[in-house]
Length: 107
Image 1 (cartoon, rainbow, N blue to C red):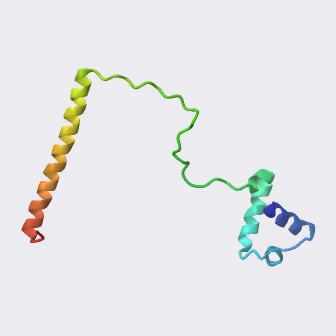
Image 2: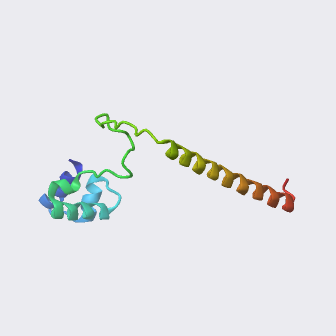
Image 3: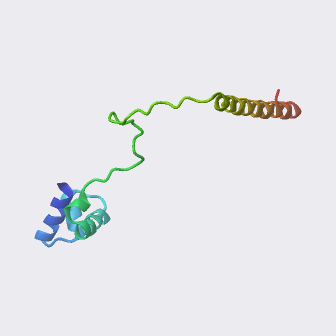
């Protein structure tokens, strides 16, 4: 592994950070210093690349599909009422925005 090779070469030849960076064409000496600290703290595993970012949202192919719960008549009506209220609120906001635009002359 490159990082380990750089650190061990530095130690073996008793080189400074600047000399090591020049030898391996590493633009920032702080990089080598960070690698040394990781190596001292965690050993070889500290130099391994870490996954970055948010994990993917892929569904596991081994996931067990749960059967969907059958909704009761009352639950279906409650969902429908909720959906209609959301649509009504959206239309009210849209209507208010249109009135505001008319007042401002944007129509």
